[in-house]
Image 1: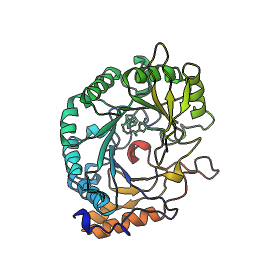
Image 2: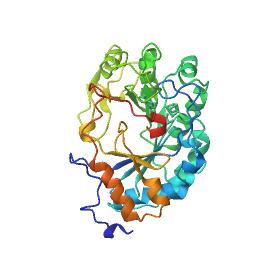
Image 3: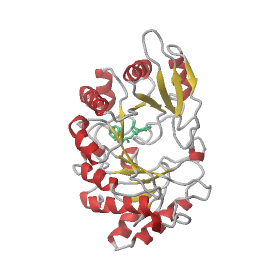
Image 4: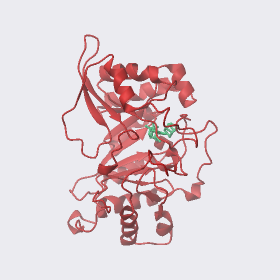
Amino acid sequence: MPASEVDTETGLLTDSFGRTARDLRVSLTDRCNLRCSYCMPAEGLPWLPDEQTLTDDEVLRLLAVAVERLGVRKLRFTGGEPLLRASLERLVAGAHQLVTHEGRPPEITLTTNGLGLDKRLSGLVAAGLDRVNVSLDSLDRQRYAALTRRDRLPDVLASLRAVEQAGLTPIKVNAVIMREVNTDDIVPLATFALERGYQLRYIEQMPLGPKHSWDRRQMVTAAEILEALGEHFTLTPLDEPRGAAPAELWQVHPTEQTPGGIIGVIASVSAPFCGSCDRTRITSDGQVRNCLFSQVETDLRGLLRRGATDDELALAWRGSHLTKGPGHGIDLPGFHQPDRPMSAIGG
Ligand code: SAM
Ligand code: SF4
């Protein structure tokens, strides 16, 4: 639909608290080639059968509804591991053809563990990929292998170099810090990122991995991460409006050994940013989730396969957002971890 015909007054994903979702996380698969201990059990999970996974055409139809009817501006492909989707280039190219309410293609990004990204990067960039976030929790090969249960650190580093050469800036690196697992990586990861001009973002571990594996008292908090960094670097809060961005950004001052730069801390648990959330999500089996932690989903795949029109899909998606809660409530007494783990929701 041409942008001029879109009803921008009524067509947005606005919830009952006045937040509007502009950023869509699209999970392309629940499968993964790593087994990060905060995300998946060693044996993996019961994967979705192929027939329940959205086809490429179904994904592209939902993306068109989101961007051209519902006002979504940013698309982030994720999973599971999105590079396991052989048709990722086709999906990026299809997404790049869409026109936002502002008359531009949506911003297209990828969150990936980086395995094999170097080999596919040029095709993805040609298709319209704008940026990537690469997950990297340790620079110590043994610790990386223990944490992800696969000895693949060299592959991730090769991919980061390829992203740097392709000039896809800013290059964001995500690190989840776990007590007695990779706290010794806090400073080396910062040094590594600053030396290369990457934007490192530490993420507090959330209760979205194997059931009963998360303990609030054991979680490494943003405050602890900042304290560890403060012993080596001088940090000042970046004086910029944060908007809906999850990361609190810090300016790191240069030292004699290390250049300065920007580091982010995502305090999802200790300082939630739900009040300014602008996310909506679809799982690889076509369920809309209005929050990572929601207990209910809206079945767009069922609607699609029963022949729903774009109007009907948009209406159902908007209905999902009207029920979005004020926050995830991890710290509230009645909190229940969602049945789906992070890898099946799309992080
Ligand atoms: N496989 C890709 C990757 O690892 O980047 C994309 C999917 S992964 C679920 C997306 C992000 O979620 C990663 O940065 C990962 O570190 C993060 N993540 C996974 N489980 C988490 C948890 N329990 N708490 C916080 N972050 C988590
Ligand atoms: Fe795979 Fe990403 Fe989960 Fe690690 S965090 S197991 S790479 S989906």
